[in-house]
Image (cartoon, rainbow, N blue to C red; front, side, top):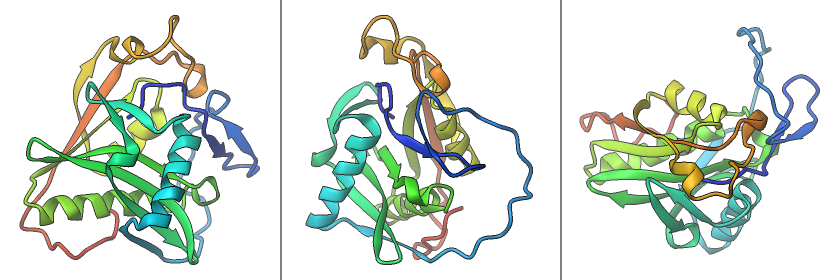
Length: 208
């Protein structure tokens, strides 16, 4: 969703320590993780103080609040934002806009303390509910070739790859390509889309 070397921190699933974006690695695991009793996640439209928290999270994640997605440069502070809360505290945010009869997820971020707690899934479910209520039959988003966590996340939530734009990320970056996740060079943009069933109930906020 953002053409830059993402400076955000992630939590190691084994030791719990924080690791920077380029130093992160993928691992193959099974479903053996013990079941955790997590607090409920509340998603809602951002209020003024929420927007400050959301923009600070986006700045922490992307290094800026101006991003490039679907070939356009966008200011996150001018977009609609929904936020997630856990235990009465800020847990994550999603910025979106209307685009040609679709809802466009421009940016999504989770507080590192709540990674792997389902926050991202609830935020995407909220965006899909907004899209259905507006009569939009699809949700679109994009990411870069290095962002393996985002590709995993969106495809798990029913999104399909619709387009590869070779070199699109590098056009908005420095030369040579900046290192991204796991030091993979950031070069290309990948676009994803999910078709929505407008007959589905509009009230559900649970992730798919």
